[in-house]
Structures are given as C-alpha cells and as structure tokens.
Length: 194
Image 1: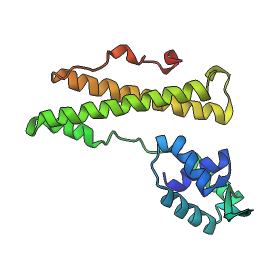
Image 2: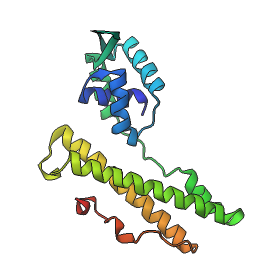
Image 3: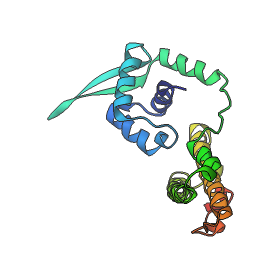
C-alpha cells in the first residue's frame, strides 16, 4: 500500500484542500498510517500530475488561493483496482518484540522500563479510540456502508491496542514488573466498553 491509496480513500470519503486532508489524516487515518504534511502535499501533487485527482483552485479573501482535491475518474479506477488486488499477509515485524526476545543479553531493567512506557502509550491510544467510538459511533448496530467500514477499522484499532496492552502486561509481569492497572481496566471486547 502506498500513501496514494490512503489519500484516495480519504478523498473518496470527502474532498478537501491539502490542509483539510492533513488535519483529517491526523484525526483518523493517521492512527493507522503515518505521513507528514509535506509527504501529503507532495503526494497530492504527483496524484494531480498523474490524473488521479482533480484540483479546483478556490479564491480566498486575504489569504492565498486554496487547492481543493477530489478523486478523478482515473483515480476511481486506480482505487477500485487496488481494492480488488489481494493483500499479502502482514507479519508482526516490530522492534519491541526483538528487544523482548533479546532482553536476556543486555540491560533487562532498561528494556522493562521501555516496555512500561510503551504500555502506557498503548493505554492512552486505547482511551482515545474508545472516546472516538463513543462519540462518532454511538450505535454501531445501525451502521451501513462506508460508515460501517470506518467503525470496523476503528474496532480493529481497539482490538490491536488491547492486544498490545495484554502482551506487554504479560511480559512485564513475567519478569516481576507489576501491572500498574488491573487487567479489567479494558474489556476484551470493544463492544463492552460502550
């Protein structure tokens, strides 16, 4: 997957300027795909050059003109083709897992301290996802179409954060670092947090 595909999805949901896309990206898609605003602007420029997006220049009073992007028919085809192409399985490839495995060969206390910080970062992200779920999707059972898709991706994020917290808790506890929160802080099923 390339940033182009992520931006095509975002623009299919709603067109916008580079700034608007960057802000939306940070609030939503940025939870699953990292890109700087410079990368987003450069990629939008390439996509416009390739005919994947249409660009409308909108005059603004007292400010520079704004470019508003929307997916072109060519971009719709590119996105549809990419969506229909099977994805390869994504392996768990993480530096943290290698550090966990190699902790016996170095400063285990430093590794444990790092893992405790990571666990708190995952807890904070889980809380943010739970807040998004509660405010943006108060009734998941009533969702359909692209809104249901967005909810299910958020649900995947909830499950992923719960996985990381449980795995880091297990590792830390096995090596004598107590959990700072009981395991019941976050239910196994994101539906139960609603």
